Length: 141
Image 1 (cartoon, one colour):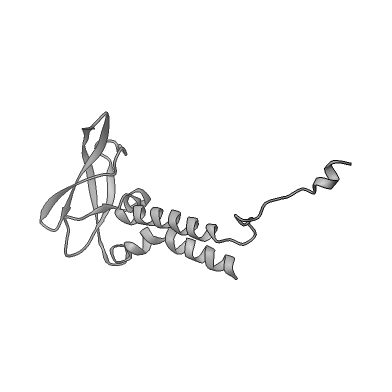
Image 2 (cartoon, rainbow, N blue to C red):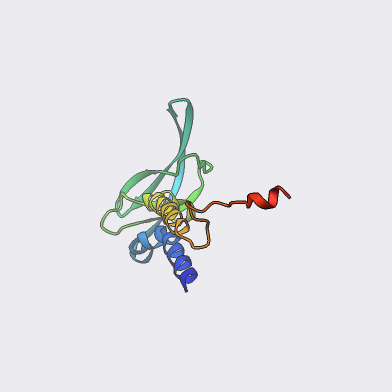
């Protein structure tokens, strides 16, 4: 029974990026965006690249930045999804689009903490006070 509870909580944590975006997935507006530029940004010792994507929502055009270090070819079409009331907050409608949000980082940290906490209280591990002793009389024979 305890292992089922452990696995169930792990499953809930792993699915956090999906149910964190559930309103967006179920009620969001879809549109198509086009990659028009690859932008390089210098961060300390290395460069990060971002695909710049332009899309239209209603009568307005918006630009978003793709996930870090994921280069889509210029001119490629991507399906985007955005909240009906906030068309400027679109994300790429794919696994990489959902995983590049803060829900994923939160789920990853929570997954590590939960597993460390749960596995530290498993039964069957040796206690700290126990030590193995030998009988000195048997060694002298």
